[in-house]
Length: 306
Length: 175
Image (cartoon, rainbow over all chains, first blue to last red; front, top):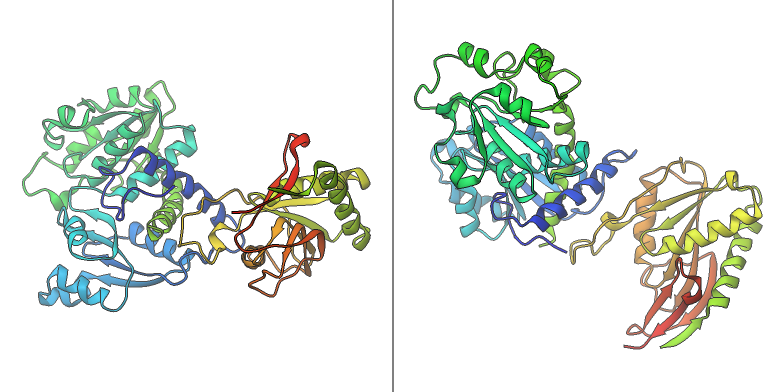
């Protein structure tokens, strides 16, 4: 059993077996993380660079922790404080780093396809930690892991993805993954933030009323409005968005099912989620973060074997 | 294929090993048993079952240890992990590690590494059903041995232990 791919560029090119292998390996690593010594020597002689061309808190710390728990050596790179600010190209930067004998690259970039470009030009294994509005595969994997942990299986699970679908790499990766694993997906949000042909292209249903989506689903994965990626106004104001599409306690209590609330973070409290929902007992947001480390350990472990 | 231990011999040998362990640790109050995943567990299940006939089951602390992530060849080929299940502290205890075959010693080396992540045992002992002596790659030896055999590197020792007791045996395979 091994992964069918050398890099983790996205969920799109993974098989169902790949996903199952990653999730079951993640569960082994979650056991390791409950032990007195939360560290194993598996990646002892592997060096990994975390190449972050875009800001990140959770993903970057989660990857770094996962690498350390596997005993890998880590290097950190933030574009803002590097020679990239002096005009060095991406390929030059990476080739220079690789000439220092680095084995794997974890990369986040604001341009969609940046890790795919790198994968064509360098020998090291690449893990996509988010590329523009394309994919964020490890987030989708940890979301799936958290859902599987809570519900036992993804088969037949009803998942609503709510918010800025258009600009969200989390949404795209989640849709790919959930469809491959046999879950049902509805996307909900303002028409301007949902791609026009999403039903034809990805086989998901579209719902413009958040309440209807919540009534239907088992899990609501709520997304942040990605203002940094919106070049033109797509809704009138955050306040209005919150009134029409935000989830508050009152709305959550008004629906008949006790649904599970997820969010990839960072939360804009009071916009897409109210504090009493985000911190309430139906939310598994912090479990998602916890599971993130185990899932990323599994990805790094499996890729280092290929 | 040559039979090293028949079904009857396996039963007797496991009984003997259980008695030997008990001889050295009469009270068992500071002794714990840990079987190595995946195949050592069949052996440790049997030893522990035998011990349960001899002392009250509540005195026996028994866990399972998976060493996949500690192997020195972990990245040469992909190994699937099994469950580690140690529900007690091994701090200052005597740990009896149980595996089916001791060959190069590399598995036991990894097991010692893995074990130390759960605490600092007072002493670690090793109990194996088959010892392929003269083929060690690390300075490791067992304290309780079912049967010592001389083998070539290209030979394979197959241990069949499990539910169906009639087919239980240890075989030597030429290849």
